[in-house]
Length: 438
Image 1 (cartoon, rainbow, N blue to C red):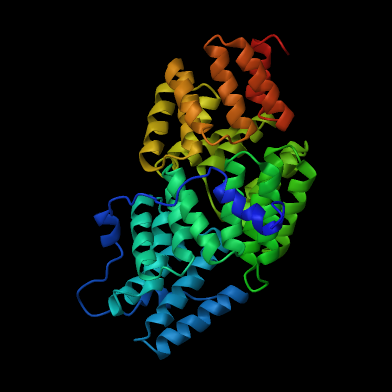
Image 2: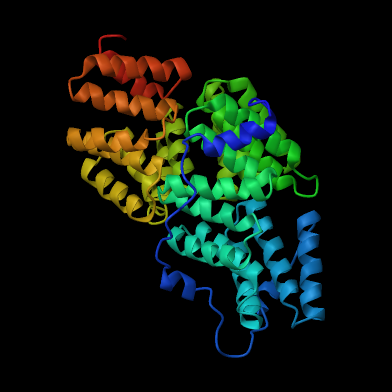
């Protein structure tokens, strides 16, 4: 097979490191597993899931049909699984976390009816992932794989959890297993993400196009998610017009899709349309609040001279610090504010996840605290896979400059700007000035 064929591109994404297939199993997390174990008493009636009042639209009507099936067949495990599946899908479409609560209620009933039900087990693992309980999700995914070795869903969920935990080798093995079992939108999407992490944005883009083409018209949200991933890569590598095309394609598939609204806002800001960006991001935040985007909006409002509104958004973001410590740590470190607090929050993030973003934020927080050797080590972890993210490279260059390695700092800044000429102007311009390049 030609190594440049679409299939080989996807396979290369998960085989590029030449890693073995023997992934070490982590110890199961009893507390996380217990959270989805069925109760001993008789199965509950999924009253919460059935209390949801569906609205208009394809997914909402699918929820209504699933509720009707549960009412008609209250002992049918598959009916509860289907209801949970549609509720989780609607949650992804709307970015509304309350749908997860309805889905969990249906899953508790399914597990009570049949503790060995594989679909409920898999969906429960996905719920744990959404709650950032990655070790528990990995434990359930492994349990599912043991019972259903020919189903690609288990390795995909396992790979996602392991990636968040920083277990890159076994994550790649899990994704490869999924690709071998079933090359489809989901496995192509993961392959593309790995290719990006491994430093090849062009291959990642090609594989994401494969993922979009492999999608179904019956599942527009999954295709919209792939368009957002594609646009994010383009935005990070300075291809602004392509990023906008992807954002608008996602919104065409799923109107008011929160991830696409955020992407479009970022694009508009990069294009100099500050008012449009503020309006777009405000609309997205009206649907779902996130500390990262509230702080992003605060920065944009400061740029626009709207300091009172910016302060309000900061306060709103502060209320979410418990759920999003990395966002706050990164923002504080980026603005060189409260270095001790930034470092504390970065450490809290790393206690839950150990991915590249967590290491990058930790490195920036260590830099602001003057712990330069530790910052250098953390930055090396953030770049361990060779990821060509301009912001990661910029932060590494800042650390090199602080350590007195001017040549490395200049090379890093040049590399970051060659990938994206508009990379974080606040930090890039400050570094250039410090290096005498402004």
